[in-house]
Image 1 (cartoon, rainbow, N blue to C red):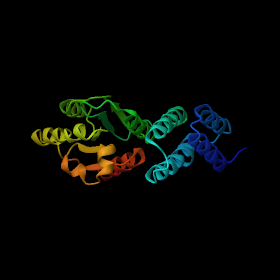
Image 2 (image 1 turned 60 degrees about the vertical axis):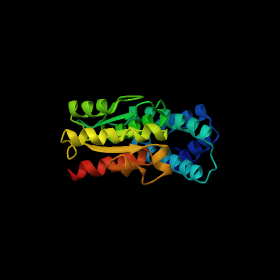
Image 3 (image 1 turned 90 degrees about the horizontal axis):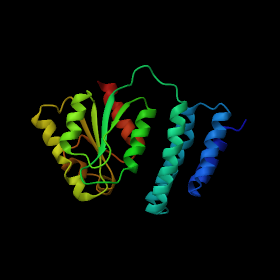
Length: 217
């Protein structure tokens, strides 16, 4: 039986080589070795992504390569998610979507997948979502949080409308508002300008922020 450290190294090698078939085979082999899916998520896929993020921050990985890597990770997580034992009840419901006018959805899908792995029920509204639609859906499904993603600065700026609607409807203490995406990573204080409760730099960060809020309530 191959140990998890070996699978971690093999998956990272496949990821850096942009070799999706090999990455898939690593995951299938690990599952065949009866390694728990949750451990593979935490110690193989998540660890590999952290390595990739460090390289990206050091400008060692181009945006185009990062996009392909994210697709490989998304496929791996979706496969592992099928093997994770399901809890009877979700920890909480969250609504996620991409800002109106923004059609870049890969980061959003990764966050949604991480949240499902963590036991949350995720309502994914998809691309170019109106601010009112975010709030209306959150109210309809009794969501604890709205997560809005944006890649472009002008679409990110429009997200202040979510805060305005929450305030006008007296929902600020019931529904948390989180933002993420390139504009917020570039300017760590930008999230305050759109009235968000927090910003998440990546899928792991988003899961940690929401988990903390849910546990506190």
